[in-house]
Length: 182
Ligand SMILES: Cc1cc2nc3c(=O)[nH]c(=O)nc-3n(C[C@H](O)[C@H](O)[C@H](O)COP(=O)(O)O)c2cc1C
Image (cartoon, rainbow, N blue to C red; front, side, top):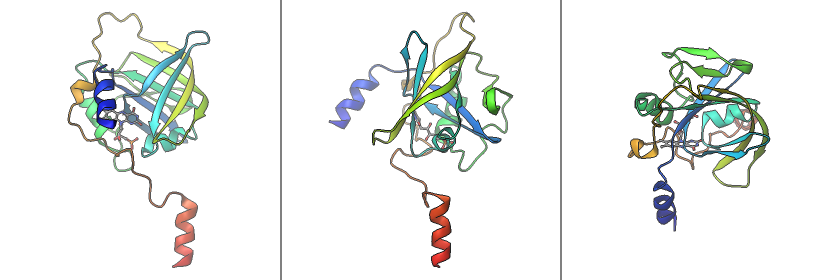
């Protein structure tokens, strides 16, 4: 079932994006294939973030996000955001970055963007959580020809965090409890 599911959905060859967010100066961002417009009026956009990801943990507490459309020449950027984790590296260190609302990183290399504000979060028990957002601003809509970077361009890449991973210890409180017990 899961192979057939992956094969069928993969045949749609979705465009990949980089989603960024920030909280209290902590910047986060990852490559995302699960994303879609979900309402016309009002304009809504949904992103599904893996519970394994640093970006998810920051997004849980941040109301602001940005979706960067990747062009077919952005493989290096896609790889950086999809195969490395903010748990280990600062993905933004070498990049030209502007700041959006609440310090959300805006990648200068990716002028086609949505600036979003979270309106709801749905966790129905799967390994990804749906973040439904209001579209606050749209950048670069009429910037000429655009060929997206797609899932098929990322064949064989290993995600920075596998979707079944979970932080260990799961919370700061759990870490404190363990230290107290030792
Ligand atoms: C092709 C591809 C598609 C991905 N799609 C998603 C996605 O839709 N949602 C998500 O949260 N992570 C997705 N990932 C995984 C993250 O981009 C990856 O684990 C990243 O390294 C996490 O970084 P972080 O820990 O700094 O957030 C995808 C990775 C790849 C290679």
